[in-house]
Amino acid sequence: MAWAPGKALRLATDKYVMRSMRPFQIDDYVFNWMMDRELTNYSGLPRFPSRQAVELWLKRFDNKYRFLLNITCLETDRVIGLQKLEYYPGTESAKADVVIGDREYWGRNVVLETRHKVLDFAFYRLRCHKVYGTVMARNVPAIFNYKALGFRCEGVLKEHDISMLGERTDIIMFGMLRREWDEIREEKQL
Ligand SMILES: CC(C)(COP(=O)(O)OP(=O)(O)OC[C@H]1O[C@@H](n2cnc3c(N)ncnc32)[C@H](O)[C@@H]1OP(=O)(O)O)[C@@H](O)C(=O)NCCC(=O)NCCS
Image (tube, rainbow, N blue to C red; front, top):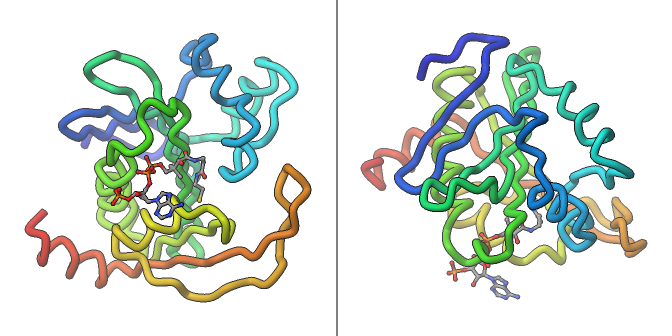
């Protein structure tokens, strides 16, 4: 991994490559799924008023503490989703989020395949002690993915948030410590 703080990051799996997102990659196809109400409702993606707003948002990702990686399918060369990682060096923790924007790719293990690499980067390159994520209680596929990756449920924040569709919702916290990821890697022989 030829990454240094502030430089673009690239992580690859067998079927996907993840790279620091750049403005020119927000083509019509990507912009359309970013504007999908169902996706933005659950994903934590802002609801963007325009393509310029997306480009402005991209500037927040400095590749040092904040990473926004596009997930590109190697077979089609399309940006089908995003992995976001926010690193807090003071607490040696990072918050992870994921969106698979192209629904054709739901049910194809993209999250599981790509998140392994994101977790390796967070734990072994950034030296995070902990990676965590939050999910709305109704988001069954996301909860399933956290569990499948070995994250522990650390608690439920009751009626903590309001979705973009206006529903009040519980938030579930999932966490993973570096030593737990070490064990999972060893068990699965990754
Ligand atoms: C969340 C998201 C990334 C999941 O995509 P995915 O991994 O392709 O999801 P899948 O359809 O494979 O579902 C994951 C698992 O949950 C299971 N699942 C999905 N809905 C289910 C339901 N209603 N009841 C039971 N199981 C369900 C699936 O069967 C699958 O398990 P399997 O692999 O054993 O078949 C995608 O839906 C998305 O991008 N949503 C919008 C953004 C978002 O919510 N991001 C997460 C924020 S925390």
